[in-house]
Image 1 (tube, one colour):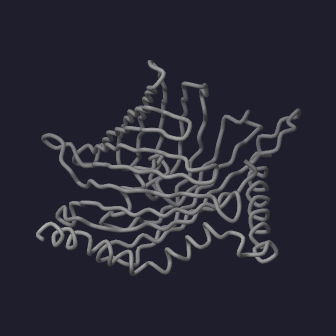
Image 2 (image 1 turned 90 degrees about the horizontal axis):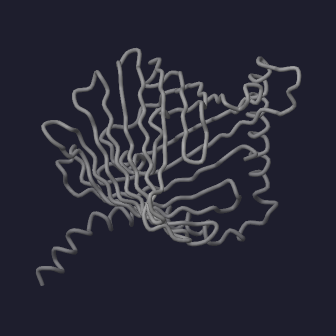
Length: 324
């Protein structure tokens, strides 16, 4: 009798979170699995929005590209935008909302090696799925910050990527960054990706980051990925670290599941935990090819809650604009 009682007490908070947002969750699943309940003419305004935004950002990209116009240039500039909106309730904090906007423009008059990147979050970190999952239970809400950067690609090959960027991040802090990425395939079932980056913030000083990822047991539909990251910033007390184990599984051409476990913390007389947890993300394309929905239940053990088990669920919608 003891085990059922303990099990019931352990899952009670998660049930509470799930039940509170059950109507929202069911509404999302109704849209995901019953896309035909709406007649095409009823949601035709979505196509008008997508076309209008795409034309607008393309026009802005071409206006910038015209400053570098060459006499024999024939290719038009293109821009791509991504908007993500989310509701991420956790225990004790029911009204947690997330919004992210990212805009990228390619400039053909500069041989498509130059991009302009605009976002309302610190895009300098090249956020991964693990970073996003970790941020789901951050103790403080993300500050809305305008980040602007110009990126130049020095080398782009199948197994090598080198780029530099200059811009503003962390508010109005000017930075310069160089990033190198190299992949190796020593075995048929193993791929290794090494990505060191060096950057300088005008207000925060020098910083460096190293990512080391391993792709294992890749199949037609599945992939196992182990990731590692270490970062150091001059004006911060301790370097940070992050590790995760992720499994990607494609259900069909329109949906996939990503499950993972992660740990993150600081390096201070050894590795110290700040947070660890588990999550499972269901992502699918619905209504339109450029719209995605995500449902992600998770359990974390963050330090600001004295490493107590913390349940939550992330509900997100993503819209992509551009001709790509």
